[in-house]
Length: 116
Image 1 (cartoon, helix red, strand yellow):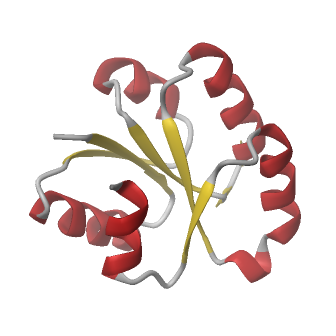
Image 2 (image 1 turned 30 degrees about the vertical axis):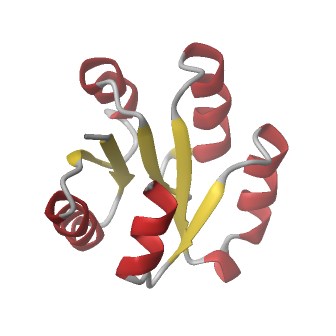
């Protein structure tokens, strides 16, 4: 059973993703905002992180850069409304060009195919 951490600033999106993933047997934890993400990564030890690109007071590109140095095996998938955040995504892709993207509003099939 894969362990997935959701890092998101919208509770409705957290709840939707948790429902989708738990129904398929994934072990899911979430943090609202980025402040507690590192702490939760250390305690939960996820295999996958679903990361909102645009969280207030949180630099997703720096987070990924630090994460890749400390925890090399974690897969990061961006959850974003891409058209609004192309510059941020390009910055993140400079850090890791293999990152997958789930577009908001997302479809259940897309979420499941990206985490499988």
